[in-house]
Structures are given as C-alpha cells and as structure tokens.
Amino acid sequence: MDAENVERINQLLDQDVELREKIKDQVTEFDKKTRTMTGLLNRIHSTPPDALPALLDSVRPTLESCRDVTAAIAALVPPNQFWRWKEMWSNSLRSAVFTAALIHYLQTGGLLGLSETSEILGIQAEWQDRFTLAIEDYLHGLITLVNELSRLAVNSVTLGNFEQPIKISVFVKDIFAGFSMLNLKNDTLRRRYDSLKYDIKKIEEVVYDVSLRKLAPSSKVDVAGAV
Amino acid sequence: MSSSRNNVVNVFDAFRIDLDEHNDRRERLIKSSRDITNLSKKVIFLLHRVMTTDDVSTADKDDRNARAAAQGREKLKEIQKLFAAVGAEVQGDRFWRYQRNVSPGLQEYIEALSFTHYLETGKLISYDEVQQSLTGELGESYFPLTTEDYLLGLSDLTGELMRYAISSISQRGGRMKANEVCTFVRNCKSDFEVFTPHFRELRKKQSVTSSSLEKIEDAAYAIAVRASEYDVPPEMLDDIIVRSVTSEDGGSRNRRGYDDGGYDHDY
Image 1 (cartoon, rainbow over the protein chains, first blue to last red):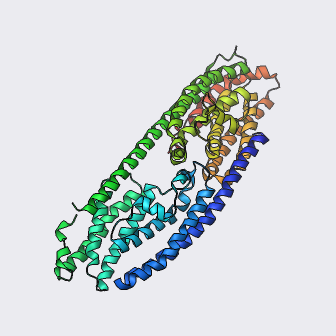
Image 2 (image 1 turned 45 degrees about the horizontal axis):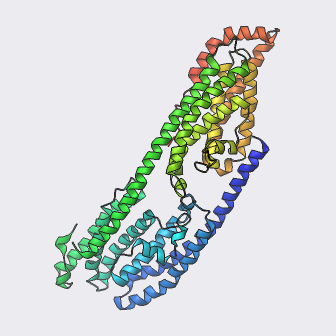
C-alpha cells in the first residue's frame, strides 16, 4: 500500500474517531437527563392523583433541556449520516420518547404522536438526514410506556385510584391495535411487541378485580371489550 | 370503534406503509448484494482459470496477466452496472441505513477488482481507485465507500493470491511469481495490521491472511530446498518441476484450495 493511500485511510478513520468521541459526550449528557426523568417519574406509582401535576411539572424542565442535546448532536452529524450514528443515542432517545409520552398520557389520557414527540424534543424537520425521530425509536418508546402503565394499573389500585386501570386498559388496547397493524420483522421491536400481551393481561386482571368488586364507576367498565 | 382507537389506527397505518417500504427496499438490496457476490466470485474464478490453464509453453507471463485482467475487466463492468442500480436505491441519507445490507457484495466485488488490479499492475488498489470504479459517467459516486468495506475486501484478496501462487508454481516462471506474491502478501499483512484496532472483522481476517501467507512461505521454502539439490539452470528446473509438482499441486488444491465456499462473511 503506498504512503498516500495509507494517509488517506488514516485521515478518514481519524475523522470518524473524533466524531464518535464528540457524539459520545452528548449521549452521556442525554443519558443523564433521561435517567433523572425516569427516576422522578418512578414516583407516579406512589403519588396520589392530586399531587400528580406537581410531580409532572418537576420533570418538565429536564425534558425541555433535551432540546440542547438533540441540537448538539444534529450539529455534529455530517449530512446524510443519520443512520450511521443513530445507534449511539437510540437508547437515550427511546427513553426520552417514553418520558414525553408518559407525561402526556398522565395529563391528557391520550397518545402523544410522533411529530408532537419530535417537537417536544426540539427535533427540527430540516435535520432529517442528521437527526430525526425514526418510527422504530418512537415505537420502542411506546412499548416502554405500555410496560410502565401495566405497573401503574396495579399501583394506582393500591393508592385507591380505581378509575386509572380502566383508562389504562382502553388506552393500551388502542396502542396494541395499532401495533397489530404493522408487519414487523424478526427484530427487537417484534420481540418487545410480542411481550405486550403480558402487560395487557396484567391490566385486564386488575380491571377484572376492580369491576368485580364494584370499586370503579360502573359506567366506564368494559371488561367485555378485552382484546 | 372509539375515536381514540380510530386515531391510533390511522397513525399506525402510516407507519405500516413506511415500514413496509423500508423492508421491501432492504430485501431488494440484499438480493442485489447477493447477485453482486455471485458475479464477483465468477470474476475471481475466471482470473484463476485464465492464469492457470492458458497454454504455458507459448504464453509470456505478462501477456497472460494482461489477458486475464482484460477479461476480468469486462465482467466487472456488469457488476458496476448493478452498483449503479444500488446507488439509485440508496441516495441521500438512505445509504447508511442499508450499508450493512450492501456491504457483503461490495466486499466481494473489491476482492475481484483488487485481484484484477494486481494482475494488471502488481500493486494494491487504492481507496480512491475503488471509489472511482463506483462512479457514474458524470463523475457522481454511486455511494460513499466505507474504509471498512475497502479494507475487508482487500483482506480477502490475500487468500486468492495464495491460491494463485500455489497453483502457478508448476508453471514456467511460476516459482519466481510465487516469491513475488509471497513478498506482496507479506506487505499486505503488515499494511493491514495498522488498521486492525478500528475493525473487529479485520482482526479476524488478519489471521486468515497469516495462514495464507504461511502457505505461500511453505511453498517458497519447498522450492528453495529442492532447487538446491539440482545444480541446473532455472529453465531445466522448470521442466523438472512441471513433471514432479503436478501431482502434489493437485493434492494441495484439494486440501487448501477453493474450500471456503465464500459464504463465511456474507451475512
């Protein structure tokens, strides 16, 4: 191999190494933020409904600060190289999606869409080829949300909130219906989707217990609507 | 059906279209990559065939190399057409999404291309030359060449050179050629060593390169030992070796020849 060629390759490799380091720093930041948020949100399992808004408010500043990280990563990634580097931050990003969707659900009872999630995380449309919220990552975030809500269904009963499991049941079944429309390949998303039925089963059991004992307002109970 | 259900279903419907499109494209690219792998293997076989089966007594060594390479070039053009089609599928940010699906065929192609290049010039093809071969008439690259594909493709070349060296030993001038190849592969190995910290796959391939090198070295050793037993001019020795090595060459080919099947690194 002549010297010129070796030099050329080394130059390309050095660029990659340098960029990887820089992205890694941002991902570390991102990770800290998502850990802080999931730590705080873990308290939803022990927070009575009237104290919930204050708890959600305490998470919001950190969620909003994720915009700094997404902007920093978008600035680092060279044009067209989004898919090359995305593995580095996809765990953090999925975690941020989960956080945003959970807060949204607890506030409104509805599903936070992909574009709304992007907006909350400050992801701009013109970053498309450098930083974007891929469908796959959004869906991973939603599955984590379902996992968490199945726990919440159980714990809200313990807290005396008998209505929450029923709301969760309807919500989660909507999401499951959505997932079942996708032709998923044999990847981690598919495996995690397959595990959703256990969450649904768990939620159904809670709904069953609550409605059997007439603990929930009867008008909202719809056990027969089980998937 | 509730309105919330309808909303979710509509959103996921759009996801499905997107994901299906992605999976279909992925399948198409995997298929192209497989076609490219097959064609590249054919080029490599073609080169070996021309190098070893041509009429030995009349053909001049350089001439034979040039003829093999010219035939290889023709075949490589077909493959380059396939790459143009791949390029159209992976425009913009798509390339890095499907890079892993394209890479097996690309590496096999680089192996064939670098073998052809070696026969033409006696040199290792450069990164820029490989990228240049994947460029359309208007000078547009079909897609960016990754350093990893380049190095891994070259790493496979050493195995082909080993076969080439061993099978040409029985030919006139083949011992000289084997020594040349031996030096060349030795240089390749040390060239690649510098880059191993960056690529796990390259570290694995280095051990294959080492064993290829050892086989050539053993062959060179056998030649040196035998040559010392005969105090005759090289041309006479050629005749002796043509007679004596034929059986051994056949044996060694079965043992260490085309045995990798080529599918070890495809997926």
